[in-house]
Image 1 (tube, helix red, strand yellow):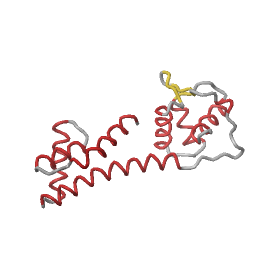
Image 2 (cartoon, helix red, strand yellow):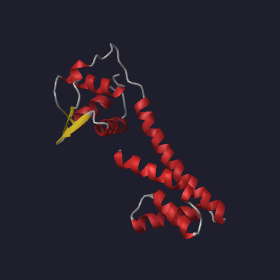
Image 3 (cartoon, helix red, strand yellow):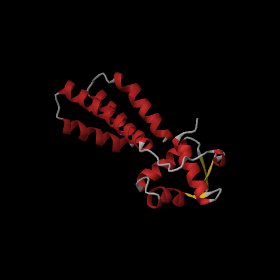
Image 4 (tube, one colour):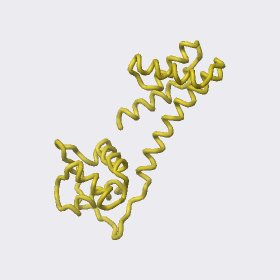
Length: 163
């Protein structure tokens, strides 16, 4: 089954009549010309399409990694915001992990949330690590069992490294 992302990509390439599009041409068409997405959403779409191997990057240009000419674009096609919403949901998930860790530390120590957040930021900057790992280290500094958060933090880190 053809994904919505493939239809969007096929539409853009068929519309342009080119085998290769510059990155800016690709996302500006999605945002400014077609007004399907905001510029940021369009850039995120391109980034996701590259990660999903729907597009391949060649210098400052992209081309499809599938035969876009075989894809039938429905008449009057308009993409849903589903693709963009999935990205936002992933961001919310990562925020939830850090929030859970902070709340756990606050609950176990009686420290204020502001102090814990400040400590996490300090560790994050000092060690140049992601905030979730810094939060785990702060928890350990207080001798708090934060092992329950390891899987969520690990999943979030590996998911983000692919994005």
